[in-house]
Image (cartoon, rainbow, N blue to C red):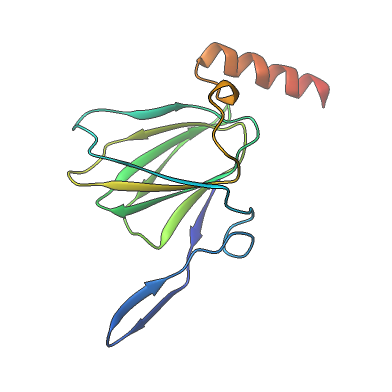
Length: 135
């Protein structure tokens, strides 16, 4: 995981921040989606994608992204729209602490296939162990 600082151009008319796949982020964008109207105290996500790379951005408001690789857990506050969090495949992601009116935009490297998503923590740990044993 790493924070990605997007280039922002500012002049008297305002600000413009662009996001280009394979330039600003290390993948071609196949899907965009956004999460919003999350009730206070509600978490979202809580799953991993075996082959999908993602960039998460707080477009309005703020939220916290908790990520783990099965061994180390880290929290990233997203509070501005020109700094996003890059998440590689096989990272467990949970979205937490949404502020009122927060909107999280996600750019993904693959199209959504429900059966590809790992939604159970035990399944995630099993797949990680298999991957590590192959290495």
